[in-house]
Amino acid sequence: MPITMVNLLDEERDWFKSCFGVQQTQSPAVTSFREMFFATTADVIVVNDTLLHERSARHPLVLGRPFIRFYAAARLVVKGHTVGTLCAYDVAPREITPDQILHLQQMAGAVVEFLMRHRALLTRPA
Image (cartoon, rainbow, N blue to C red):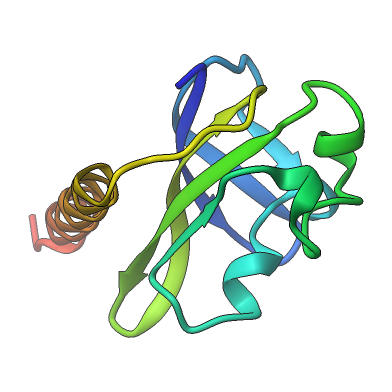
């Protein structure tokens, strides 16, 4: 995938904590795909062609640069709350296999585990 990232969400923006294929470190909420996750209980979303998907067809990053045509993401959940996503984007439509979806979920689990360990280190008494 040409663009991949771990992003953390707040009310106003997406924070790109680890990314490949983009130079920004954040984006405003208006250019986020996160609304798709808040409209479903699914832990994984795959949009094979963003122009054919109702929720993404008019998205600013689909209609404009970088012209996203594929989106796949796994929800990052910490203590019952969605804190972000592990996601992949492409500028061409594509399909992924069930095994690739499973790998995306497994990597998302590893990200959550890393976040929890990092938090434990930060909150540990000195």
